Amino acid sequence: MPARNHTQWSANPPLETGEWVDSRIYSEQEIFEEENEKIFKHVWVPVCHESELPKPYDFRTTTIAREPIVICRGPDNEVRAFLNVCPHRGMLIERRPSGSFLEGQPSGNPKRITCMFHAWQFDMKGNCVYVAREKEGYQDRLCKENVGLRRLRCEVKFGGFVWVNLDDNPAQTVEEWCGEPFECLRESLNAEPLEVFHYHKAIVDTNYKLWHDTNSEFYHDFMHYHNRITGFNDAYFARKNFAYDNGHVVVGTFEVNYENYEGFESRAELSFPHLPPNQWYMVDLFPGFNFNLRGSALRCDIVTPLGPNKVMIEFRGLGLKRDTPEERMTRINHHNSIWGPFGRNLHEDLIGVAGQGATMGPGTEPRHILHGRHENETIHDEIGMRHYYGTWGQWMNRLPSEPDKPYTATAVAAE
Image (cartoon, rainbow, N blue to C red; front, side, top):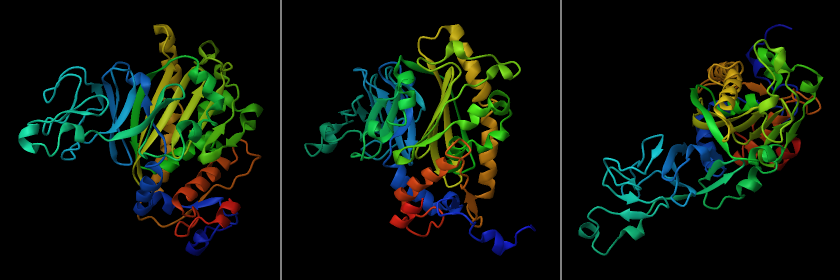
C-alpha cells in the first residue's frame, strides 16, 4: 500500500465511533480552557500526602486549574485547604512550595498565615485574626470577622492522600467518586500509616491526557526492556482492564519475575501489607491521576495541566512509615530503579509522550489518534482509552472524534 496523500491521510479510519479521537483535543487552547472550567474545577484532586504535613502548622502549596492552593495541618491535627489568596487585595499569600507556619516570618507572627503585602494574618482554620490598623482604616464598616480565607472541600482518604475539590458542592464525595476502583488497594493502603520517601516533578511539552494514556494502556510495553525481561508471560498478557464509573480504570495484577533482570532480586520480603508477593496493581483515575502499587513501593502521579501542550507531573514514591532505615533504603532502590527520574521505565514513557507532544502542538493539522484495539479487555485492549474519552466527552459535551460536535446520546450509545 503506498504512502497516503493528504485526502487519504485525513479520511476517517474504518473503525467505530469511539475508537479514535481528533488530535485537536490535545492542541486547541479553547478546549484546554474548557477542561479547566468543566472538569478540573469540579473533580477531586489528590494534591499531596498527609505525611508531607507531619506536624501542626506544616503546609504545602499547589495549584488546581490555575487557582493557587495552600494545604496546612492545624494544631488540632486536621488537614485543611484554602485558596492561597488574600481577601484584601487578591495577593498570593504563601510563595514557598512547603514549610511551616510555626516559626515567625519577617512579614508575620508565629502560627499565622501572613500576607506580606499589608500584614493581614490568618489562623490554620482560615479565620482572619489580624488586620493592620483595622479601626483606623475601616472604623465599624468592616472588621476581621468579616473576612477570611476561601475554604475548600478537603478530605484525607485512601492511605492518607489529601484530596481537594474547588467545587463547594461536588456531585460526589471522594468515596463516591473513586472508592470502587480503590477496592483492590484499599486494604493494603489503609493497613498502617504510609510515608512519602521520594518526590520529583517534570514539566513535559505534551498534553496531560497523553500522559494519562501511557498509564492506561500496556500495548507500548514493548518499549520497556525491563517489562520484557521481568514480566512477559501468559499471566502478564492475560491481565484485565476493569472500567469503572467516572472514567476510572484498574489494571489487574500478576506476579513480576524481578529475578529475571540482571542485578534485581525478588521484592516479596517488603511487599505492602495484604499484597501477595511481587504483585502489581494500577489504578487510573479520571482525569489524570495514577496509583501504581508494585510490590514494595507505591508510585503516585498527579498531573497539573499548564497548557494544551504542557503539563507538570508530580511523582511520589511511598512506603510504610514504620520502615527501618535498611527497609526504607531498599524501597527507595526498588522504586527508583523503575520509576525514579533515571529509572528503567519512567524516562521511556516520558520520551513517548514528548514525541506525541511534538507532533500535536497548537497549530498542527488535525489527525486521528487510534484507540481501536480489542483483545478481550486484557492489557493490550485499548478499552482504557475508550472508556476515558467517553467520560471526557460527557464532561466537555464534545465528541472526542469530532470535537466541534456535541456529545449526544447517540454518541454515548456508540461508545
